[in-house]
Image 1 (cartoon, rainbow, N blue to C red):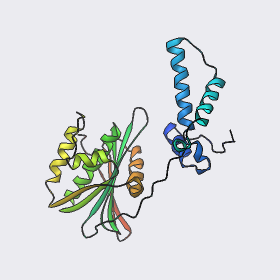
Image 2: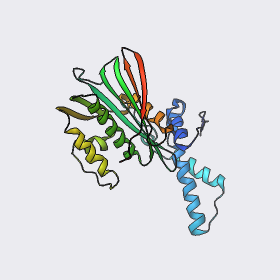
Image 3: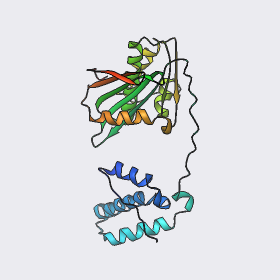
Image 4: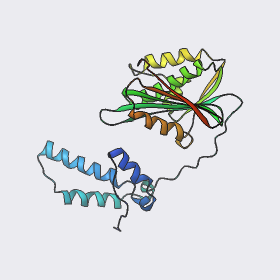
Length: 245
């Protein structure tokens, strides 16, 4: 097996895995961290349930052997080709995203509403503990609240979570008890618009909202920051609490 030059590093498992995947030097070994994790988990189960100790060297050898026997097609993920996003800029448009990290998971919500390429607002909110779907749903709810507050009557909204987009479009049902009241509030807010659409976009087209949602992870529950920018000049921040649904 040839030398692997990339390093496994990061503040936590998720960040380290993201760093490993984004390092193009070892594309053919993308599956190695997952195989090693699976090997350690298997050794752990043998020790707990079968009282059998496996030497770390044996675990490593088994993992490397598994990787070498993987079909090449499972080792290299084809890169997705994403074309330009076709936006209707005759009416306001918005992006939203939610982030959940840690154990227990801390959530942040982010979003942007655009009136033009140079006139927009940014929303960051600390959402407390919850799942990624909770963070995504709350981020969407807050964007809708801001749109209503700004007296926007027509808007197109985009997000990279198919689940949330499908819920908003009523093409699938939410079966999570905690999330149903939030979704009901969203559907009620929808009635305030003359026109509204919810569309799924790939993550490559949602990078701004993704970054904003990650920044919001550092905010306490209920802290909501809004930055308004007009003609490339930010003219104010204001903060206000909201009640968690």
